[in-house]
Length: 401
Image 1 (cartoon, rainbow, N blue to C red):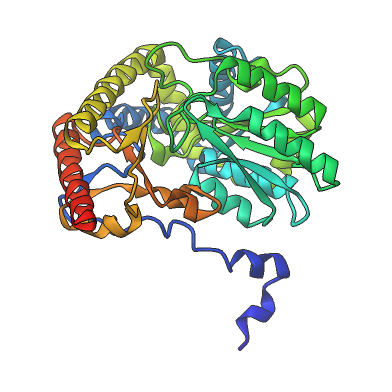
Image 2: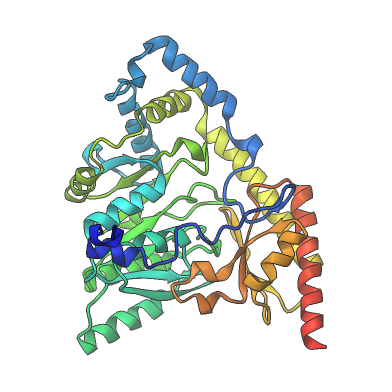
């Protein structure tokens, strides 16, 4: 049987890309996981979730386990609306769609708004899973560089002007992680945010704002692009994965009503109704501000330790950005192919993510790597960085001698 015969053209094109998640290697037992972009085990509120599930089932018996789910499901949407309002985003009920995490949100947006003719602009580097999603719908992806202040909005303006002058198709969507970006940890300053909104009006494109890390600030979070938007051009994606439990798969899209209607059309009834109901009960049972305060303090200490360890153990030629929140530190290792170095690191039981996977053109990321401070203990972070520093130093000595 010719299996390919049954796939439509767009699926055949998507299947020519690298398989999703191929960048993630098998990790040896006992590995120090500086690659893992999720919370440490002790920070996942398993007991609180367990109590919420118990409460839900005791009060409603089988009801939360049916297709329609619990009457408590709408409470989650209200809780998220209230949280967004506290951050300066006034979102009406019909302007909010609950999703199975941020990835489903990005996929729904791509499915509704992209085809092979649509141009998407992305940051370079950017979240690798978003790149994988966009490639399922279009190969017309243009990359705009990131520096220590986030997206180079001036560079983007030049690209837009040049494409318009040459009569090339303009981007319809810009995908950006303006606050504590993945992988660089950088944050777009307010001047660039305002200029980006001006460009969206001038060149008529939408901004897909991924705000998965926006609440994990070490100081004061900047206003989101959605909070600054006055024309409905920002499609805001958020998630509870980084501040509660990633396996619950709770995310959302906040956007103008016609967009939400389209996204919901394709989502249909693919709700995780039980997870949404349990999360609503859990959020009612805690002080979220206190939880965020705890998380911020822990992550700030871990980040500070990781930076100090880089300064102590890495060669002086290596550079990095110092984040103001989030999960990650972005490191440049001149003269080292970080993908080629990874097997040695795994043999020494330390993992990281090679930088090339965060670029549309992977050659641009050869000398970079991403480290996460969210998962491991402070002791393991320091130990892991020391091991990596020794490997890099030895690698550079061997190649210079």
